[in-house]
Length: 335
Ligand SMILES: [Zn+2]
Image 1 (cartoon, rainbow, N blue to C red):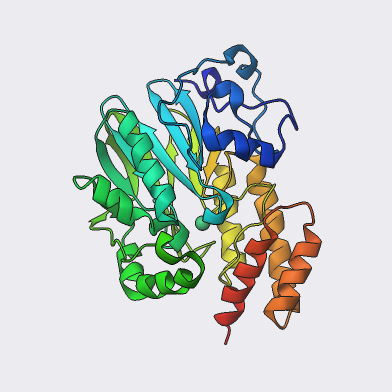
Image 2 (cartoon, protein in one colour; image 1 turned 135 degrees about the horizontal axis):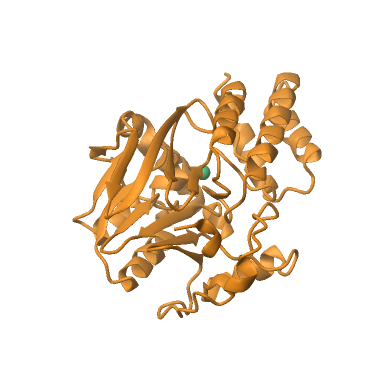
């Protein structure tokens, strides 16, 4: 199962503007020929031979708000749901194996989680489990919907995540409610199962789960698909096109974690927590970003200064609002 046969497809550089991409994505499953990856998308000589390899039309696509990208790698299909911007462009990854689906992350806003659930149902396979990558609200609020729609699917996370959600989850939801109203979860969905580090097979697919601390989040799962050579990095790696979230002062250790990811050989397709998949160069561009953010944080006495300086340092990155959001949390924690 070589990745080179069938990977996320990309269009020629700059074929689609981001807004055009998102408009397209709003109503359509994007087959291989219709994907636009981030600027760091892996150049892959075989992709050109692969246009249209997945032409399946999505029967429920009309009216969908989020975008879905599909990649087939051997017997495995990776379906990525990318939320609209008001849901922070957060991804839910659905790994479809021979007999079941494994869902990673649950969206911020309930209507988008509902779209994920409806899409999964069109695959016609049971949800084997739901796995939460880390305890940031944009990744778990919508688990409320997924656990209602798939009551037999147990919710897994690394040891420690459930405690974080029990301790702080409700306060996080309450902080989002003035902005999102009833689109945010009413209750915290606490994982009931612990995912252990290391290699395991689920529905015939090999996963290598890794645990990282003190990076973008205090505790973060990453998942390798060694046979498909896909790295699911979640919020350890960000798109070169968008700002990263820097909500806690873990800059130094986050850079160490990124160096550890760089050592993983052969993983040229990286799915990330926000925005479309990237290639290895996004690890380097994330290091550059985190390093600069660290310097700016050290030199900035308040959130406003931090935010303005970071935006000025990376004027080409989109989602400047994420910098303001990060700065508020980063400097609130300092008090
Ligand atoms: Zn996130």
